[in-house]
Amino acid sequence: FFRIGEVSRIAGVPASVLRFWEGEFPRINPRRTDSGQRVYRRKDVELILHIKRLLYDEKFTIKGARQHLKNRSGTPVPKVHPDLINDIKAELEEIRNLLK
Image 1 (cartoon, one colour):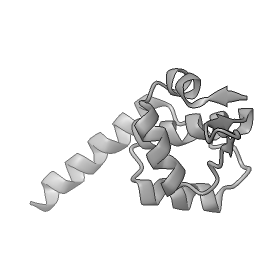
Image 2: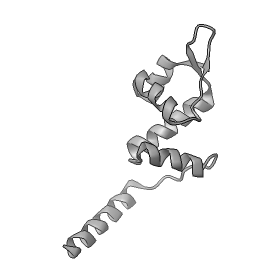
Image 3: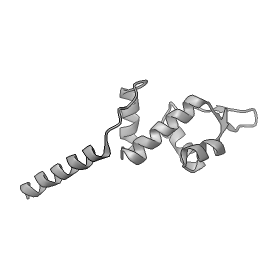
């Protein structure tokens, strides 16, 4: 089990963000000790890291990440090479400029 401070350091986000995400993503469900402290299991930490990647790296909104997790529960998300993303963005910008 991990305490919130440990998970905060592992994920690289403040504890307040973890508490916020707990309200936004029902699958993050840490147990509570008798004194009320959150204790996270390994699967909680893995989910938090996945959510962080969706929000910070993939630029999902909270709502979009929640929907993504709902649609793909248990299925690993394939990695997309950053160069491919940059190429797609460049093409879309060219198309947008042509339509102006």
